Image 1 (cartoon, rainbow, N blue to C red):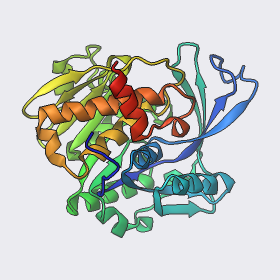
Image 2: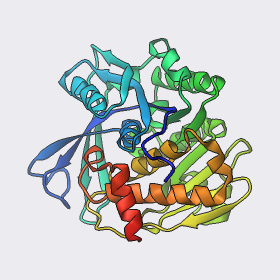
Image 3: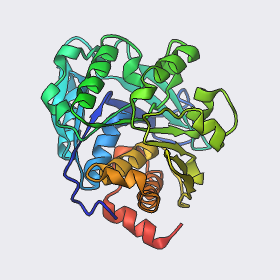
Length: 327
């Protein structure tokens, strides 16, 4: 694999980090849960840790509450080797919480506590611009676009990273309950669409953004924009489809015993970015790209075999073991 624990370019991940409270029992509603376990989460933070698990270099930029949970989360980033000098703490607002239940079918239901949470209050002035300028890849989602001042901070960070020559990576990570309306979510997610070099959407997000119930090449290509280098559509247990200017195709998934899908997409993204950060020519070489995407699919699959996102993120050795075993 291209990683070999030696990716040297910095991947900066921007956005929210929060605490997921997960019922101690699977397959129950939040109201029925007898108790909850706290699990660190937030897609951009998961990606940052996914990168370091695989031997890459990452940093996280965002804001946490100046509270026990906030300092715990910053500690988890540091323990996992993620650079934390882009983190701010808010004295007046709490670290965000999400109650997440896994239904009997393994899918998730969310209830969020953000009124407002610290991550929503990051201002452009608080950004560590030197850190952002040092990124080879700048990765972000859409939750940071929902309200000001965080939205302005997000736009400024993207602009600074792009000017400094970073590859921009976007995973919208749709969480509809957080948006005022579905239309607003669609509008804002697309408002920064044409800035990204790499975009990853899930099959559900593809349907949401296109308004079509078809998960096919035509539907995916309706999301293409001229500056895009790679568009990925992840299909859960069916693998992923990839699209570039010159070629497109699909990669099969690995069959594993799924316990919890939390963090699988973030693991996939972290694996992809770790493999291309020092060699973006991979995006134009179909054979090498397919190899990287198979590795990313293996990382995603492994993440579904344990509860919680961060505890389940694989090492390179874990992924190579699954790759050798075949699907």
